[in-house]
Amino acid sequence: MVSAQSMMATALACLAFSVAPVAATTYSMVKEYYGSSFFNEWTFYNNYDNLTNGDVTYVSAQNATAYQLAYVDTATNHAIIKVDNTSTVVYDNKRNSVRITSVDSFGVGSLWVADMYHVPYGCSVWPAWWSQAPLWPQGGEIDTFEGINTNTQNQMSLHTETGCTAVSQNQTSTLVASTNCSYAANSDQGCIVTDPSTASYGAGFASSGGGAFVTEMASTGISIWFFQRSQIPSSLSGNGSIIDTSTFGVPVANWPSTGCNIAQFFQPQNLIFDITLCGDSFTADGATWNSTCSGICYNNWVMGNGTDYNNAYFEVGYVRVFSTEGTNTVVSPTTSASGSSSTTSGSSTSSSSSVGLIHGGFWMTATVLVLVGLFSSALFTLA
Image 1: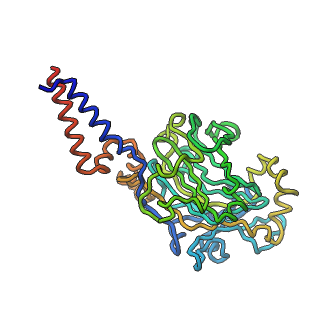
Image 2: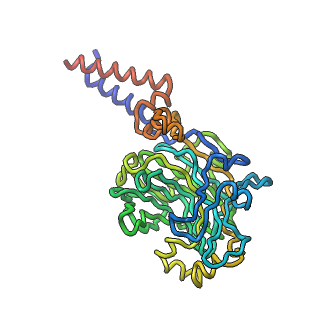
Image 3: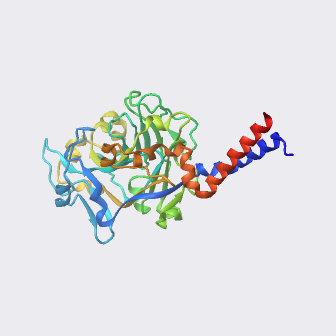
């Protein structure tokens, strides 16, 4: 007769074997922004920059098209997002630019990829590719790409409510400027990691053909990878609909859940592209301005004929969003308003054991039933 101890050992072995794949970092594509329809599901801010006090007016979708500040290049199918570089701006006026936000948001268990060939740079230029929940700082902010002036390295950061810190980061970058992610600390500096690669921003990015930024918002933590054009993994360059982050290697930046409960501090994120000029970042960091550029930011750069902004544009091959395999983390405005659980539940499914049954299909279900039987038999024998 098999002993209770043996049955328990068998059950535990089965449990270890069967449950591990549920936590696999495999994602399926659920959204793509590409080609002629790239701009179809974004909202244009259509207001002056009253968010970071930059010297720009973010134009409407209609004017962005009319002024050729947001369009798809028919020769390459790449999306162009740019600052006006043809108009002459006189004193006290602002220069036109673009800020777009995705209509849909994406919950915990999501991963998004932005393939870019060029990013904005130059004196007074402050571009970003980032995300945030609607009621900032509640729900958090993830800055995947952020540059300033003629700097050569990308800066990545999180901004949250108080209580989120960077602890035991598993990343390739050793350039950690701050570890407190709270908006209330250090003048909302956030917890910052800088990419050591000089190909991650500016002229170096453009000369190497750009690259791909990958952002993972998982229950276990937030991670960012950057791959130069020549180093993009085949699962991305091959346009696959399923990707596995275990093939990406160690991320350049990582904020584990050990110091920041992701489900607590991060809600579904809207994706954002924007380019502002001057603004709060320049006011707060005069040293950066003085070390890379000269004169007065607005007077000597924003004003004038605009030729200084010939490099102030994004060229985006695509943006793709993935959800943990077996889930859908897309939250649309209509779904959110109706209170439907079909998409909002996806934001927390990465930590839900029930998703494992969907992911594993019949064999996962069978394994769980066997485990239940084994445990029941063991308990009966012990009794």
